Amino acid sequence: MAAQFGRRLCKGVTTTAVAAAAVAALAASQAPGVTTDDQGRRTTSDATPSPEETADAAGATGNSPYYTDLPPLNSPRPAPSASTGTDVSGVTEAGIPATVLDAYKKAEAALREKRPGCNLPWQLLAAIGKVESGQARGGRVDADGTTLSPILGPQLDGNGFALIKDTDNGAYDGNSSYDQAVGPMQFIPSTWEWAGRDGNGDGREDPNNIYDAALAAGHYLCRFDWDLSDQRDLDKAILSYNNSTEYLNTVMTWLEYYRRGTHEIPDGTGTLPADRSDIGSGTVWPSPTTPSTSPSPKPSTKPAKPAKPGKPSGSAPSPKPPADSGSPSTPPGTPPPTPTDTVDHLEDAGTATLTAMAGDTFTERMSARAETETGKAVAKVRIRFTVLGDTDTTFTGGERVATVVTNGSGVAVAPALRAGEKTGPVVVQATVVGRTVKGVAYRATVTERVADTLVRTGGKALTCTPGGEFADAVELRATYEGAAADKVAATATLVTSADDPAANDKGPYFKGADGKAVRALSGLTTDADGLLRLPQLYADDTTGTFLLRVTTAGGATATVELTVAAAETESPAPSTPASTPASPAPSADPSAGPAA
Picture 1 (cartoon, one colour):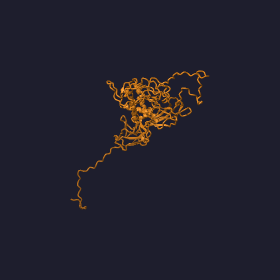
Picture 2 (spheres, helix red, strand yellow):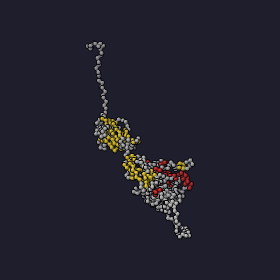
Picture 3 (cartoon, one colour):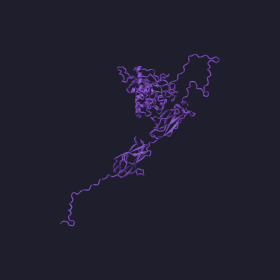
Picture 4 (cartoon, one colour):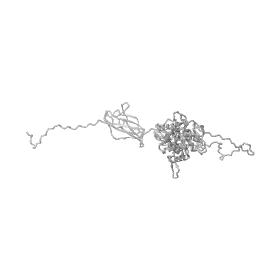
């Protein structure tokens, strides 16, 4: 969480304790995703993300403290005019520093292009930025968006907070002993290592820059293909940032407030929050300008006790042996080893063969087991899985890095891999966060998209007259295991015969770019529904029955019959003479001769 701001500096709107309590009650009772049980207790069980969805139990911030200030009850209104100089309830809190507001909106635009299905609203980034750092401490940033002084959360040393030992050698937080959340969106260094983004195009990924941090937060919230227009997915995304029901309620309250209206204010003039979630824990946050350091012990002001008789003054009593005399005693002031300290190596925890077709999700998942030197499992260790090399295969959600905490059996199971379009081998490396020990390399294979069935969609006979064109197009549908096979490569050839797959040199043909006859096509691809619609077919002067053979990757084949025949001509009806001579009248007596 952000560095200590002290008390609120410029509270333009005075809200009474009653109003604040009402807002708190409203946030608690009406926060989306929050329900009550039959005793009136609140629960967010439906909103709690699964281990796969959080991937990292520490979240983006290491579950660091956050600001709990709530917006005023009044809805925001336009900023007061300079002529009157009067403030309106809600105006001060609704104002967002110009550079900070610009960063949120640019991040939303970038995510709309990269992850359109996520539906990330910039107001969500503003709500998180408010709760994490008071909008970069009221917009104290330079023209490029970098904070004028570092914003650091408390060191995560397990003293009232999570225990996360140093993972960046102090590169981001200046602390080589423990991690601290950094910057206006309060990323811990190990999360920033994979979530960091360059939001202002300066070639750097700086957690202290609001453009970089806002874009990183957007990608973090969208990493599991969540649709943030769906309240259930929105709750999961917020909880994955900081896994606390109260945090969810607070962020949702600010989100709804900002949705009702905001306005731009000058940088450095924003209202600073005052109340923190860690109040009462006995902890003090570090100065915003310097990294946290352990305070030096104060010299004792008490007089020294006189030495006991028989012992020289100043000599220390002999230390008592520890209860377990077989183990060396821990030097005073040395923290006990963390689970991570005890890890000697990682082992593959029975990962099966990893193979998937391009565009599909791998059915098998990688798992690693953290072990001590003697092979004992180690729980609560952060394992980082990283997709290496030139590949577009990623974990579900589009990220190339996922951090997972080992369970009670010492096993960490990575999120599912999603195969990209580039076929071939993929390497994923598992390492221990904060340690340099033997890891595990997993090898996966991405195969080309295939179809196992190919059939023509229509049953109408395909006919044409010599020198003409076929009136009906040839359309086929490819499937794989009964489902539409999309983006599958295919070829189409007018073959010589059923037994001779060579291209025919006469009969029906396609036209090439130069207008010349082409009787074999490659580079065809099925669409999203598995349909393949072939180009227009023409006929030369040769009549007869011809065969068109279409084949997809995977070996699915369909043969289509084409007929070229001259148009049938109707036979003319027999003509009737204009006049017909009358037949002689029959003779009454057949034996009689003709009349004279």
